[in-house]
Length: 64
Length: 494
Image (cartoon, each protein chain N blue to C red):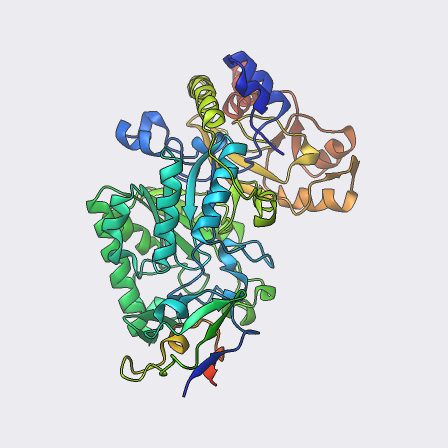
């Protein structure tokens, strides 16, 4: 179970990168991507997925 | 290129006369003011020393000094209804042009390049395009890299305040002397109509609760800054029907809590920016509504009437933006800082400023003796340096002053969509729009104007004069006023 970033909607603000408790998000060739291996959907850390919660663009961080 | 003084001049010994000559040929492009109009005489010396080189905090300084913003902080922790993140904050941006986001290392390279090229540079600000306090690691790293290379550059940030209390002590440690907080409300009921949500303590809050938290954090941050002696500017976006009646209370509250300056800006809500307010038809205030609110708030914190709502990557004097000359692809890969131009420039400015202060005092004396209660509104075409030094047809905006026996006061600027004279030919359609922009102005002072536009302005009831070309603005206005009203009063008595 993991989330992914829709790069057509992403504004590349990077908020998700530093909110992610698993350090699963990083910049790859000027877009942010979620490492599906590291992503836990924030289970055990927070009630809501941090990338979804902080993202200013609705529908950008979605289940993979 | 709009250098205040040609750089060649700076490398030679200069005199005030040489400076005046230089001013005539190439004024600075700061065609609007920004900041407190209070000068050296009105402020405690320690405060004056801190703001005298900051174009946004001192109206006088903006004639001489430039700021640059580096867009290192794109992440934001709140959503405002006047902002669409896709295009940066619409209220502080040129529509449709997204700020070029930089890493702290790229920002350092850019700041050094600008400092070597633009001797007026005195301030480095981080104003987003998200929130400088929330995107803190990048903000902090940028300041630390730059201040190592250019120790005398003033550091300044702009924030929504939510994350501010967490970083106040680090701001003090880094010598950040100027902080701007955007405060649009002190009542969460009002806030709920401006902020759909905030991200705080790993949760998203909405509605009243979001605004309650934001308000509490903003006040806490302001109090902490005041307690530490940091100069705080409060920005408020005026949103008719939402917070326009409320900003007087905001003004009183932030003044009580020690804010140095209050800047009330008009909402920008063009639908093309895609903001919630833009798409739902929320209008911005008219010129007259903004001025009425600013007048009603005068006497609160020092009021700033002339903010340019500049971009998160702006470079140059206020009223100009040379950001496009310094995009990443134009920067050298390696560059080292050369302080000589900035130092030479500062020495010249110190002398010129004394002259300007004397000219302002003379103007005050001249008007004080006027035996008339006439109050006139004067529009000035200026390229900066505090002088009437721009051709009417080249003006992209006019600085507006009010003159009466009480003195000459800056009251704002009027922006012109397109300068009248393009490529040497005046455009009639453009002139009509310039005339509309100048509605309510009694006289325009400029360095030069053609006969044809002059006649058209005069038939629209706006007089124009190029008689005081290259004089200081205050000297020109007082000389005009004295001739019109003092002489008239004397003639009546005779």
